[in-house]
Structure formats: structure tokens, C-alpha cells
Image 1 (cartoon, rainbow, N blue to C red):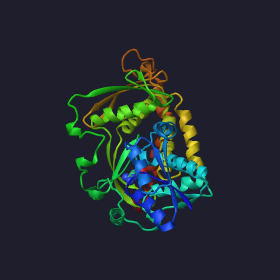
Image 2: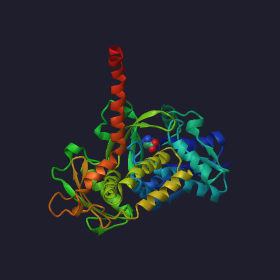
Image 3: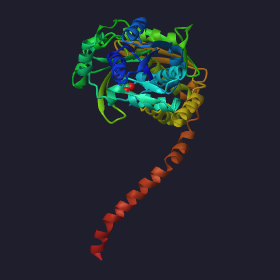
Image 4: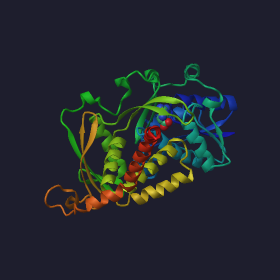
Length: 407
Ligand code: ARG
């Protein structure tokens, strides 16, 4: 049997590559999808062949990742539980798409992945495989054969499988870096400096702030400091610049799909900076009713993506709505990066609903203040009626005992 394995070159998938041959007599075809993780893809290919892969595929999906997954996430201000920019979650359906393409090309229904039975990634992988290739059969050795990290390490050393990892479990792509395990498993432990790679410790960041201007078109960043750039480049640039200022460290108690609470640490300088800027610009151009509803749409969108429901129709429908609402999200946001924070300090847009003539307290104001009197009467009508009624009912509830006795 031929098995197509989603291969990162890490401990789990290296052990699996070996095990699939040993236990199932499988011929294994490995696929590594490049979503912007800083890896030596040549070394991964060589590792795959050294461990017995029949064939290895490298797929550069960076551009597609940014256009089809990251851009909609920016428009949706996507933060799971208000904190996690979904970097790992967004890449999963795309990785599966590429692995499925290889499986179809190689004419096999067997697709293997290295996800555990405790995490979210198994949910995302399994559902995406079924959505894209219903006849496929998923093999998840870590989950199905109950592999543990210590067992894998022992197996690796017995079978000459090189392991070049630290104590942490790390997942990386252009949109962020996820770090789990080791001392982080105790949520009271402050993340040690060694877990961070993309960000400077805020206290060691430059002593002078750096200003950035980010230009948006249709809700998507299109230029930085006046220079038009493809979104992929903007993200790389901001990961470097905001990371240098210590922006984008996230330490989060997270609720997994399977119910487990986990302590998650992330680095996502570009994601945090861009979402902040985008959200601020939306506040300038959308109406208060649009903003009120969009919050719900954004949170639901993020929730679906986190929980492996990328192919759920509601996710697609919300994407349409969010795109529509972003058509006029155009303009410029000025940010100040300083010692771990990205603060919006200015914004402008041709579609700004802000009108100085309306909001100013100076004499240029064209707003007719006398309208305020009637407005507040109508706006508070039900509240004032209800308040008066309650006062009356309360008074009557006290009154009978007094009047009752006197008669
Ligand atoms: N908790 C995040 C998620 O479910 C990140 C998981 C990252 N995986 C890892 N091996 N560190 O999307």
C-alpha cells in the first residue's frame, strides 16, 4: 500500500515515516508544505529519503496561504478567544489540500498525519481530508498507536532517526509561531526567554519608538511607509520590525476543541500589528451598527476556523459578508511601536464617517445641538416609562400596610 504522509521533518512525522514502513509495510510518499516556516527544506527532503521515503514532494504554498487564508483573517480581525491569531489553525486546511492533491496524483486513498489525539490539529486535518477527498482513509499513528514523546525519542535513537529538536513543541508559519510544552505546561511559569525567536524582550527593545504607516485597500494592507508591497512582504517586514520592538508575544490560556485547557505561547508580531491597525480603520469607516454586528461575525469566523470547520458553509458565508463590509476599509493607519506595544496614534480614510464639523466642540460645528433635547426624550422613552412604573409599583407595595391599619 502507498501512504501519503504530511511530513514536517520533526520528531513525530519522522518516527511515523519509519513506523509506517515497519508496521504496515507501506511505501511512503512524503509531502512538506511551505507556509513560511523557517526550515531547511532541502534537509527535510534528504531526511525523508534517508528514512526510506519512496518519493518526496515540496510544495511552496506561501503565496496561497497569504491570499486565501491570512487576508480573510485580517479582514475578520481573527483572534480566537480574543488572543490567538490562528496561525497554526489557518495553515491546516491548506496543508491538507496540498497533501490530498499528491494522494490523488499518486492514486492512493491513504493519508497519514502526525497529530495527537489530544489536540486541535487532528480535528482540522481529519475534517479537511474528508471534505476534499471523501474516499480517503486517514492514518494517525500517534493517536491510533498511542505514541508518546518519550517512546518516540527512544524509538528514534534505536533506529538512527536524527532528532534535532529542543524540549518545546513548535509550529511555525508566516502568520505566527506557536510554542508548547516543557516548563510552559505549568501555566504559572513565566515563559523563559529561550522560547522566543521572533521577538525581542520588551525591556530590551529599542529605547526610541518607531512609527509606521500602514495603508489599506479593501481591508488588506497594501503599503508600508508609502511603499507598495505584496502582502507576503508586508507580513515578513512587520514580523521583523514589530518583533524588534517586542510586539506580538502572547501568553494565553486556551480552550481546545476536545475540551482540554492548554497554556499556549505565541509570537505573532505582524498579525498583532496588522489586526490592530485594521480594526482601528474599520472603526473610522463602518457605521456603529455594522461594527456591532461585525464583532459577532468576526468572533464566529475565528471560532469556526479554530475548531476545524474551515469547510463549514457558515464560514464561507461569513467570509462573503466580511468581504463586503471591507470594501470601503481604505486609508492609512499610523502606529507607534515601543517596548512591546503597537499603539495606533493616527488614522485617515477617504471613506471616514468621522466629520469634524459634526464632532468639534469649537464654533465650526454645524451640528444643531437643539435637536439633542427631543432626541434624548425619544431615545430614552421606554427606559423612563419603565423606571416611573417601577417606582409606582414599589410605592404601592409599601403603601397598603400603612393605609390598611388606619381604616
Ligand atoms: N493551540 C494552537 C492551535 O491549536 C497551536 C498548536 C500548535 N502546535 C504545536 N505543535 N505547537 O492552533
